[in-house]
Amino acid sequence: MFKKAFSSFFSKKTQLTIPREIVNADKTLSDFLKEEIAASSYIKPDYRQLVHDAIIKREYLKSGPALSADEKREMGLNTRYKFFKPQTEVLTEEGLKVGPNEAFSIIEIRAQHRHSNIQNQISMLESGVVTQLEVASPSGDRDCTWCKQQDGKKYPLNVDIDKLIQDNCTCVYCRLGLLAVVNDNNA
Ligand SMILES: [Zn+2]
Image (cartoon, rainbow, N blue to C red; front, side, top):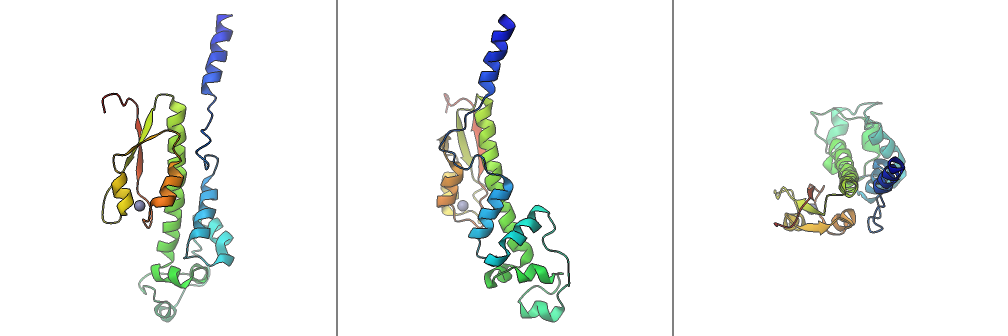
C-alpha cells in the first residue's frame, strides 16, 4: 500500500507543466533555424529550405564547383579562402558582404542560443528547486546596450526569456547566459 502511494506521489511530481508564458517551449533546433533563416537578411527567400538543411547536416553547402580568384574578387570575398558556388548563390548582397562562413555561422549560433536557453529554462523548471533565473552578460564590445543592462537581472521562472531577448536584443548574436537561482533569501 505504502509503496503504491509513494510511486504515484513521485510520478505526479515528475510530470512537468510548462508555464503557458513560455510559448516556444516545444520548438526544436530545426524550428529555430527556420525562424532565424526567414528573419535573416543574408539568405535569399528561395533558398531558405536548402540553407536550413545544409546547416542541420553541418555541410554548409561546401561542395560543388569552387569559386575562382576572379569570381571571389568580383563578389568582394576574401581570395585567400575557398568558397563554393552553392554557398554564394544562396546569399543576398548583404550576405555576401559578411561572407558565407560568417553568414551561416551567425544564423546557426542565433538558433542554437535560443534553443539552449529554452532547454536550460525547462531544466530549471524540472529541477523543482530553482526559484528564479538570473541573466548574465559578458558585457563586451559585441554586446548591445540592452544585453549589458540585463547583467545580474533576475526573472521569475515563467518569464518568456526567448521573447524578451527577441524583442529587445540588437546583438549580431546574443551572448546572454541564464543562471539558476536556487535560494534568493539572502540576495
Ligand atoms: Zn544583445
